[in-house]
Length: 321
Image (cartoon, rainbow, N blue to C red):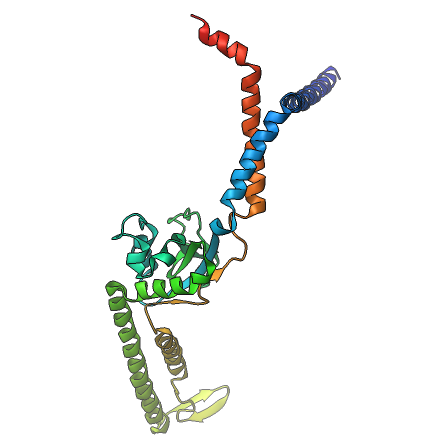
């Protein structure tokens, strides 16, 4: 009984300690909140001026002429690997506006008036769950582990993103991007090679289908070997079943259909399934940047107010030898 009472007391003490710690944390939070409220009240005008300054900066950065929009597209790759196209796209991602040789204007062959409105060009891998050739996720953070063999990067897709200040020029940029990739020598060579392989695969399937079909006819009309056997208490004379090669023909048809579908889709090394889709809301909208400006402004004003209130102590510390 004494042991049980001892355990019960220890548990109550533990609950009490936790409750006391939580109470102290709540009191500490309200004390900090009260301190911030008092210091804001004592330096009200300083706080208002600093918040208004940062609010003005936020609204300036989100003015209509500086608003930035996202345009995104899923790219289908024919012939090349996604990793190869990713390396080629680095030429666009690492472009330098100040250098005419490495600018987007030079690489995409577009006017400077269009290139200057493009903030950046990005490409991302597409993740396929369960290896069913269905795009499930875009790896925007580029953190997908290569050791994951179940959820893998798709080899025939990449996701493109353009940040632009002028959404009316998106169609011009889209045409230039497609021309840039489709005229790449490596991608053109791999595209032609893969398309030739598909064409040859279709020819082989057609020939093999004809051969099996002829073989099936010969086998069907061929005289059966005379044989005598007892099956299910029935006397059977001769062969009663014919091999029609149904499974072989069906397998060939599946392979040929897949090759024909791929051949029809192989129109150029890269295609954008829906083109670049523009997001209607800017990433630096006035409301968003206005709220960010207010929060940053208030944080800076608190630092300034604390510095003002402790000016004497800071000066005394600096003067101390």
